[in-house]
Picture 1 (cartoon, one colour):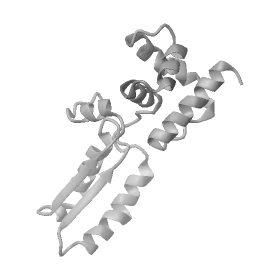
Picture 2 (cartoon, one colour; picture 1 turned 90 degrees about the vertical axis):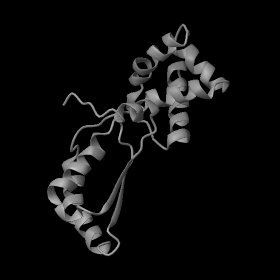
Picture 3 (cartoon, helix red, strand yellow; picture 1 turned 60 degrees about the vertical axis):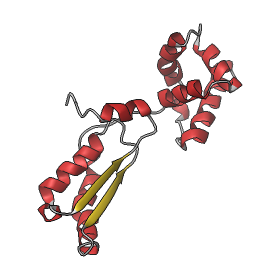
Length: 159
C-alpha cells in the first residue's frame, strides 16, 4: 500500500470512529484538496506532515479540524424532494393526529450543515400546516461541524 493510500486509509478510519461517517474510497483525491489549507494554516510543510501529527494524537483540536474538513457540508433549501414529500404527506399529518391533545412537536434535523434543511422544514410547516399555530414547535438542528453551526446561527444565504 502506498504512503498516500495508507494516509487516506487512516483518515477514513479516523472519520468513521469519530463521526460514524464512512468515506468513499474513491474520494482519496479530497484528502489533498481539503487538508492542504489546514496544513498551511497550522504551519506544516505538507498534508503528510499534518496527518503524521494527527496520528501522533497530541492535538485533539487539530484532529477535529481534519475530521471536519474530510466530511461533506452539503446543504440547500428543500434538498432531496422525497423526504420533504414524506414529511408533508405522511409523517407530519400522523404526528398532528397523534399529538393533538398534547399540541407539542419536536423535529430533529441532523447533519444539517449550515441550516437550510431546518429552515425548509419550518417553511413547510408554516405553509402546509396552519393547524400547528398555537402548538409548541421545536426544530432542533445539529451537525458535527462547529463552523457550519456557527454559520447557521446567522441565517444569511446566497440562494
